[in-house]
Length: 221
Length: 283
Image (cartoon, rainbow over all chains, first blue to last red; front, side):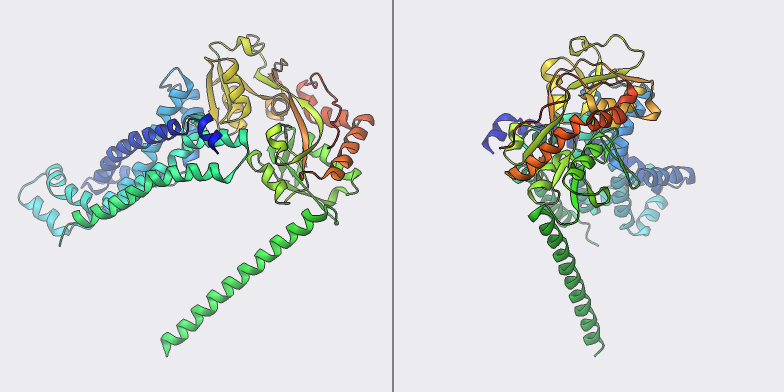
């Protein structure tokens, strides 16, 4: 037990997990917001693009996306992001995590938009705001406040899903390191619990914080 | 009245669910006990790889590979007909647990004998000596061993012993790690990586697959020694002795050579130094 903590850089592996989580969470939030705006926009073709994205990406196995990013994008299409294979896999993992979770962010935001009474959107348009203005000033701020709890769930899922990156990233992040420790020391419950504990520490505060925030920030109607 | 009836139905459903759950539990552990307890009975459970071409591969209900052929021979010597063998999937990370919990009696799954593993299970054998090697495209003559890997792209499986060893031996290696070897082979064929490294038996197994025949070759410069043993319950000396005798007989009567040639020979692979091995004494 002590040996495992001494011989393997578990903190370093979790640091990579945190990096992957933060970078891809930011990416997922940006892409997801854009897609959500597309899906509620008044232009039919944009709405179709939005729903196509969500329906294609949502619950496509993440392992498949990861393998595709290296075997398909890097090796066949030649989209190499870095000379070093591990750095290349790192950036592709961030992109794929962001793309995958953007679909869920989009749906969480859209549910937030749907909690806003239709009269508000109509009122915004009738006082002369453009679609972009009514989105920015009226709808999205309320949508974000209304969808904090589901966004928190997406973030927690994202943190746990970073482990899937092990299929392309090697032993840099926590699930890959766990595979290496299992290979060298045999599968053992204590090792498993160290890594499980790591993820509890990362995800539990987010769950508590988003529940509190969603209660404090919810729009009173 | 109505709520009462609904409550009754719900209670009955819950009861039925728990009862059936208990039942299946009992069945499962009961079967495991009789299997693991005496090692006898009318069938034997053997752990193999299900996804390793040339070594242990499940296709429909057919099991093929060198490990499978060796397991069949040894089981035959222990008194089990072929149809009395129950094949169980033994992924690398679960092998010790499968043995210690009695879910299998023997494991033939590219199981290297190491001191760490000996603390948890016992080994009979080795029945084969493999070594870490490189698989390259058939027309590539620039890679001849680990010291020619500078500037080349290499592929292996996340966390595997082979990946760690190559990182130690070639510090600046450009290593792509995947979840399985199949992805590495696909990357190698599509020129994404230049070489794939792991045990030569596994490499030969992939190179012998019909779709890769003639496209890939094993370099043949092993730089480690992996002694494949038969995993069995810790300190079961009697079973260990029986298996060792069977391995000796298999090597003597030519079945060993046949199992190797049938499964790995197609890619022009010949077993490296130390083969056929002399099994260790059981203790």
